[in-house]
Length: 146
Image (cartoon, one colour):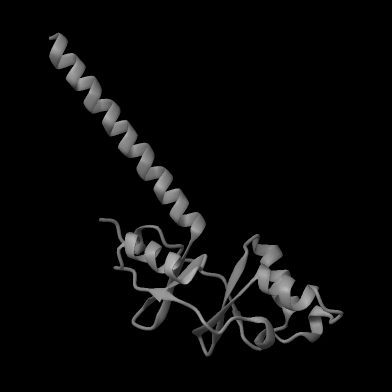
C-alpha cells in the first residue's frame, strides 16, 4: 500500500506568523496556491487559506495590511507522518472535513498533502489498474485463440 511520502508536496510554502493578511494575499497570488503553512521559530503553528482571507478580511471594511495573520489563521491543523498509508490520510481528511494535511517528521514540517494530490494519485492508480486489466484481458484472448 502506498504511503503519504509518495504523493506529498515537499516544497511547502510557509509564512511567518507575524505577517499581515496583505502579506498572505500577495504570497498566495505570487505562488498561485490556495494555502500557506504558518510558522513560528521554524515550526508549523497553523494554516491560512484563501477562504480565511475571504471570510475574515474581505467581508469586513478592514484593510488587509491592518489585519494581523494571527487573527485570520487557523491554529488547529491535522497532520500525518510520511509513513502513514494514503488510505489512512484520506480517512483522517474525511473524518475531520478538511482539505489538507500537514506531513510532520520528528515534529518538523516535511510536506503537505491536499485533495488535489489525492485526486492525482487516484487518477494515476485508476489508469494503471485499467491498463493492467486491459493487458490481462488481451492475454486471455490470445491464450484462448492460440
